[in-house]
Image (cartoon, rainbow, N blue to C red; front, side, top):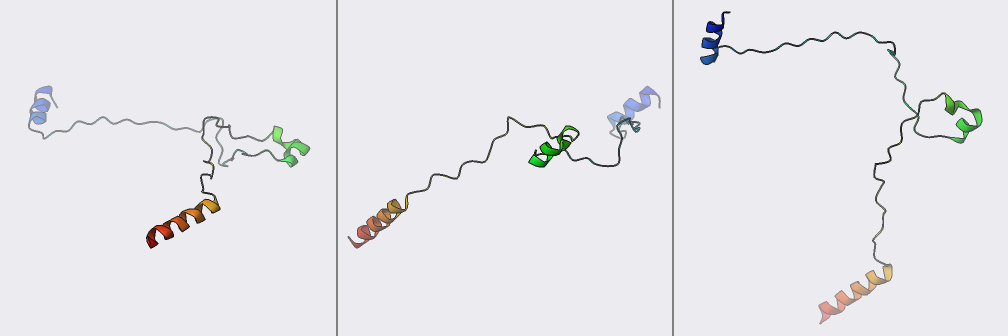
Length: 92
């Protein structure tokens, strides 16, 4: 379309211009149909046989946070004492 007609159609909102992108995907030199999962743990058997040298390992994430410690519980005797105190308060 000529520029004048395009601007007129755009002004009337009868024309919507879009950009089309296309990509060519080809198989590279490292293409493989098998999915190799990297190892996450080093076992004593791997060290004894030496198989750890040819296995891919998952990189270690030093910035990840660990599990929060399961702590912060009251002592059982303190629980009993607070229950007894509550009973006596209810009795007057």
